Length: 414
Image 1 (cartoon, rainbow, N blue to C red):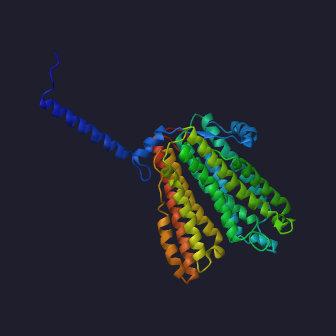
Image 2: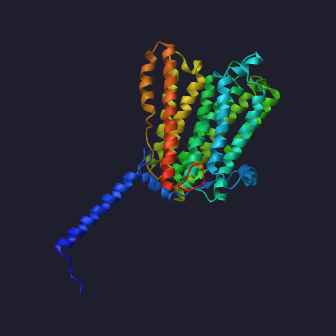
Image 3: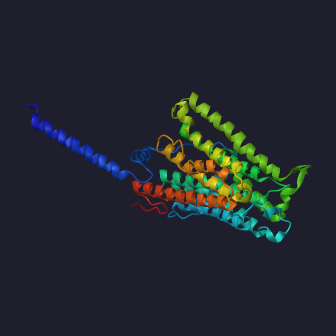
C-alpha cells in the first residue's frame, strides 16, 4: 500500500527540484555567447530552411549548370569554403578598383594611363562569374555531402549582405562621374537601391518565414559578368555612347537597377507578404512587429544622407568610396542581425548600436570647419564599424559552430 510522503520527503523533493532548475539554468548560461543568447541558440536548433525560387532563368539555366559543376568538387570540401571563396573574389574586385580608382574618376580621365588596365576587366568578368557559381553551388555541395546546417545559411547570407555593397561600388568604376556620366549622388542612390532590394528579401522572410529568391538576382549577376566582359573588349568609353541624345548607355544600367531592385522586387515582396497573410502561412506577426526591421534600414538612409547633406566639406564628393563603404558595412551588420533574429525566431533589434555615434556626429558635423577633421572622422568611423562587424561575424560563427559541434571550413565534427 502506497503511503503519502511525509514533510521530510516533500522537502527533499523540493530541494532536488530546485537543484535541477539551478543546474538547468547554469547549463543555459553556459550556452550563452557574446552575441547569441540561450534563447537564440534554442531557436537555431528548431530552425528549418524554407525558400522558393520561381525564376525561369534559375530553374532552366543556372540551377542545371550548378548541378553539373558541383559534381567536380571533391566530397571532402566543406560548402563554406565555396561560399568564402566566392566572396573573396568579389572582395578582390572591390580592392583592385579601390586601388586604381579611389574617387570614381578614372573612367572619365582622358589620360588612359590613369585608368584601370583593360586586362583587369577580363579578370573581373571571370572572377564575378566564378563567385556567382560558387554561391550557387555551396548549398548543393552541402546537400551532396549531408552537411546542411543553419550555419551554412547564416554564413552564406551573412557574406551576401556585404557582397550587396561590394558589387555596386566596384561597378561604379565603369562609369565614373561627371558631365557625361552619373553624379556621385546618383551613384550613392543606386547603391542604396541595390541594398534595398537585398534587404527587402530578408524583411520578407522575417514576416513569412520563407525566403522568396528575387527573379532579378541571377539575371543581374550574369549581366554584371557580361558588363565587365563588354568593357574589356570596348573600354570604359563604351558607357558614354549616347543611344539617343542625352541618354548614354550608362543610363541603361542606372534604370535597370532602379527597375529591378526597387520596382520589381518591391512589387513581388508586397505580393508575397499579402499571399502569406491571407493563406495564413506567414509567421503571424502583428503589423507593427513586422515593420520593426524597416526602422534600422530607414535610419541608415536618413543618418548617412544627413551627414552628406550637412557636411561643410562636402564629404561625399571628396571621399566617396570610403563614404559608400561605411554605409555598406553598417548595412551588412544591420542585415546580419535581421538574419539571425529570423533564423532564431526572435524579435528583431529595432536600432543598431552603430547608429549611436553616427547620430551624435550628424548633430555636430554642421559646425565642423576643418575638412581634415571630417575626413579623419569618416576614416575612423569606417575602421571602427569594420572592426566591430568583423568581430561580430567571427564570434557569431564560432558560437554557432560550438553549439552545433561542427567546423566552419571542415566537414569534421567536434
